Image 1 (cartoon, helix red, strand yellow):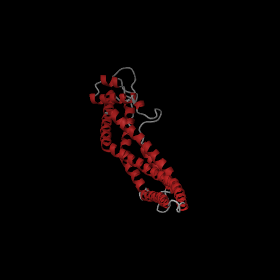
Image 2 (cartoon, helix red, strand yellow):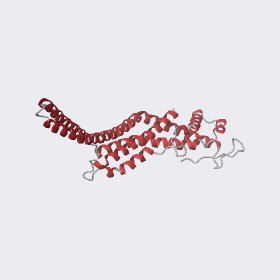
Image 3 (cartoon, rainbow, N blue to C red):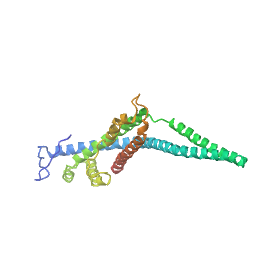
Image 4 (cartoon, rainbow, N blue to C red):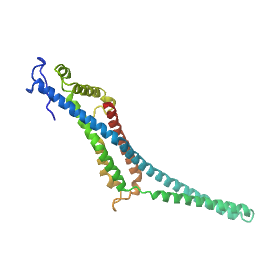
Amino acid sequence: MLRWLKVVSRGDNITSLYGASLEEEIRTFHHTSMDLKKALRLFNLLMMKRSEALRAHISELIFTSDVLDKALKRKKTLQVAGGTTGAVGGVTAVVGLALAPVTFGASLIATAVGAGMVASAGGVSAHIAKTKKKIITRDGVERVIKEFTDKVKEPEQCLSFILSGMNELRRFDTARLQRAGAQHNALKIAQMTQSVFNNMDSVRRNPGAPTGGMSSERLLQGFAKELDYYFTEKEGQKLKKSRKSKFSGRVRLLAENLQDELDYLNNMWEMFN
């Protein structure tokens, strides 16, 4: 990290407190600005290539949660429907037999209706069984975690470097350096830096929190550590039945948090441009 120079106020030609000349200070200012410019170009390239892919991974996580929620909802529906249709079907059949001597035709129809309702419940069971075949495995979840981490790590690190560099660039007295003949490109980067920090609160989720940081990577690492709780010990692949609902909620929360982080990256990307 560069050592920043604080200038005494006796005139533009006076050396800085650390003994550097004005010429050396301008040179440091220029190098810092150009490094920041390169980082901004890299961040732009990374976001152009990876933003949509990251969004697709988040959608995949939401889809995983949706699949679990729908399967759990169907299971509850089957349990209610199975109990109801079984009772109705049994009653209808008994009533049909009791009325057989009087209304033989009607009783057959009633019996058939009762049997049909039971058959319908059996059809729902078959549908649920078919849905269950789409198993959510630990390998599949870990694949999404790894791919998302691989794609988001560099943009977040790059943004962290940019914001750190901008903080350092703001320590220079740009008006003084401009009068002393600092390069236009370097001054332009410094002006953009000030504009970004003036508008930082509009994109920051928590104005008191530090900017930059690899937040998505930390979220994914924390989630990966919890997988043992949700998956069976045998080969660690099958989702524990008793924890499907909790896992669905946890995956959805992760997706929402990752979307917040991606929105932050995209907002900063837009601000830089």
